[in-house]
Length: 79
Ligand SMILES: [Zn+2]
Image (tube, rainbow, N blue to C red):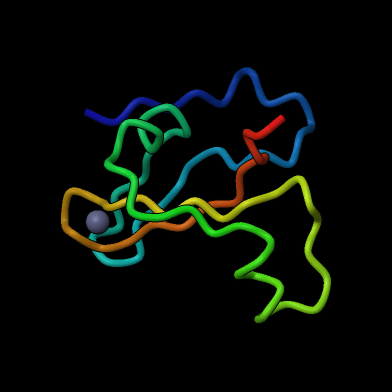
């Protein structure tokens, strides 16, 4: 059911899998991208919580099939 793709990790910081904190289902980035989007948190909102935030990153929150939110750092799509 779950497929692992560990062969094409080229020393990047990209995580191998994204785990749900509630049901522990681990998804690939591709599978996670297919989940419904819950919200996208940009610099303006994160800046109130974190003193320094890279302008080219956003926090994308998607909803797991169990209903729990799964947050992940992603590059900003704008521009
Ligand atoms: Zn889940």
